[in-house]
Length: 177
Image (cartoon, rainbow, N blue to C red):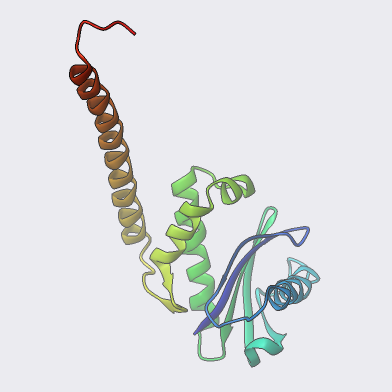
């Protein structure tokens, strides 16, 4: 099971944090983020992308599986039941989906469009369980959601224009404002 997903920049600032196993207080959450970042950031890029992590809040058999892309670390904290290569592939699917969604994803996209980033993640992982690993299915769901969003925005704007016209009609067409 996935215990948590973190995206952290090279300076240790979290850009996305999703805990699937409860971490009670904000101070404890900050401690977990700091501990995970310290364990991952001190490793050279030439080392393998998984290590046995020491995260007391989640128990003793935690693996930290991560990828370092440009200025961001994508870290999945999982229990010993999960496949290391499977989670590395899942990180790749997540990053590719973000890349397609934002056309060359960067740290600023994660900051300014966190709602969309969470939506993409929720299409892939929910409640610590992997839902979808097929990139085409993930992209199709994201595309459908984007279409629905644009449709609702256009209906809302038409509704506002229509209600303004209705108010003008009720007030009388001879009045010039």
